[in-house]
Amino acid sequence: MAAEEVKLLKTWSSRFGLRVVWALKLKGIQYDAIDEDLSNKSALLLQYNPVYKKVPVLVHNGKPISESLVILEYIDETWKQNPILPEDPLEKARERFWAKFNDEKLLPSIWGAFTKEGKEREEAIAAAVENLKFVEEELKGKKFFGGEKIGLADLAFGWLAYLICVFDEVTGFKIVDERYPLLLAWMQEFSQLPIAKDNCPPHDKLVIKYQALYEKLHPAK
Amino acid sequence: MERSDEKVKVVGTWSSQFVMRARIALNIKSVSYEFHQERLWEGKSELLLRSNPAQKKVPVLIHGGKPICESFNIVEYVDEVWSSAPSILPSDPKERATARFLAAYLDEKWFPSMRTVGYPQGEDARKAAIAQLEKGLVLLEEAFVNYSKGKSFFGGDQIGYLDIAFGSYLGWLRVAEKMSEIKLLSEAKTPRLLQWADSFSSHAAVKDVMPDTEKLADFGVRAKILKATATPKL
Image (cartoon, rainbow over all chains, first blue to last red; front, side):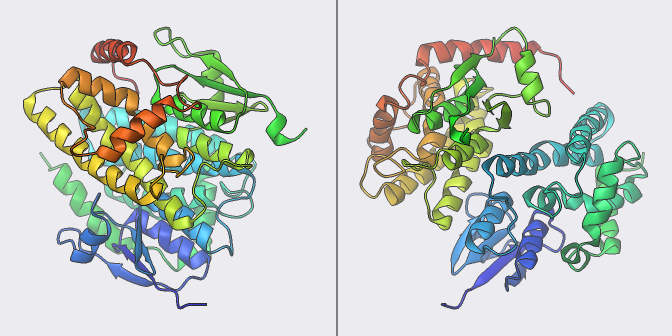
């Protein structure tokens, strides 16, 4: 087999980059990590992702793939060991739906609760509560979103396992509280997985980063 | 009973580009289905709220009683269940990744600009939107040349995933051209796409689900008016 060359452009804290790291680790794929400074984007990033100029970008034998969920599906189709999507089309559709639900609904609502103020913040919190309700429902009778093993949806939701506690600490407001016991249990299970334990950004460094951002967005009056 | 023999229903509206994708995919595979038309101005049906409680959006494909949501999800599901030719997605993983990337780009970045061109909020916004649309069309013209390999569609001889992704926007593209009196697809800048637009629109799997431009333009105006007066949803 020809030598594989796999590179991953990301940042140390990127939620979307991290899900790709987890997938690569899960499948035992060797890769070179390139940590970008988004305030000073490299020529390589601009060349590999001219449309969005964002991380993550996976580069496989010189060919770039962008958008984290697209990358995850590409990884699953290219390296067949430890699949992240099931064979059954209905189950596959379910995983894809929930991965997208995280990206389009849950994550933005929680991010809104962190970044916004006043009425907009109240609306974001209300949306997050509604979204979390559906996510909690989806976990009924399951250890992971993927069932007994993690799958695409778990990788998409995985940021909750290490970042929610950071938001809690910085804001003093707990968004994923005891109303969501299944989700809290899932966060515990996920964070104990070898891929998560060994590959999460350091908690203290995240607190510093998000504390600084929070203070910038909500200057003390 | 084989999965592919079970009853198929599509919940949607005639105007939605997302619903169109589901219907084209089923048509390509010659799958008969029942179309449940949502009443646009009367609130969402019980069926829709029950089958897609998390998002409450169309389209929903209900197959053997099980709901599948999200337009591209549905297209991939249809391709996988009715796996006999013609294939909708390309077989090569890199081509699949590019197709999915461009499809997501159309929804997230390109179409929002189309809305601004069709129903502009000021001249500067309109100009910026047109620039964004033209940038996207350059990308798509290039993708067409690469993927069609001289044939009529992005999918080659057959309509494929990118044809569906972009083709479902032709209705709105024509509305935007009509409302703004500019040509987005042209012989000068996008000769292959111009030709493709005709082939796509007249294809057997597409022609009965492509909305009429006038009707869509009126709907767009009405929808915008309603949106401006609606109270914000949580």
